[in-house]
Length: 187
Image (cartoon, rainbow, N blue to C red; front, side, top):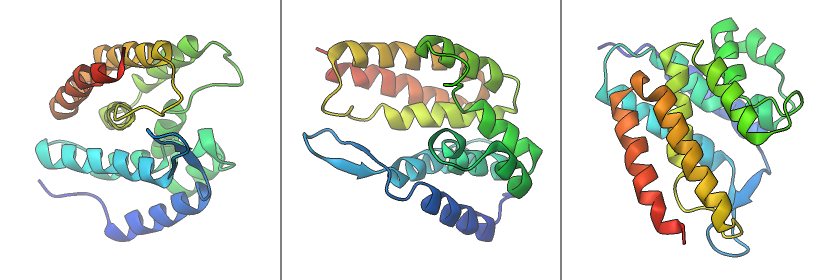
């Protein structure tokens, strides 16, 4: 299958995302460890690229751009309107669906359910990005997470799997395995 994405677009988008997430870090698995946030963005893109190589009938351009941009509205000052102006309505709608509504919905569980509802209105490539995002987040949890937080995160991952697994057999299998493997982190 012909790939429908441009390396130049990918490089330009990577530069934008790197600039927007510059200085953001997340906690590593060891106390005091901080990891550059762009590492997470790259990991999600790697998962999407692997899926593209495993499956047919994927709009690779949409999947890659949404993977690169999946946290840009939620975690930076880059707005929906800016995403739409630069990348078009379809990408902007996908990125918006991947963004939790933290201002309108205070309950974390309700935020996830709302996001999943909105994701399911999008193309399967957006579903794939959500699965890829959770796969990447199921590596070793930050050292400061409580056992309860880890248990809830695994339950949420199962919800994501149950709601979105039809979009990609490859990513569904990866997510199911990561959920199973994550049990080593729960006491």
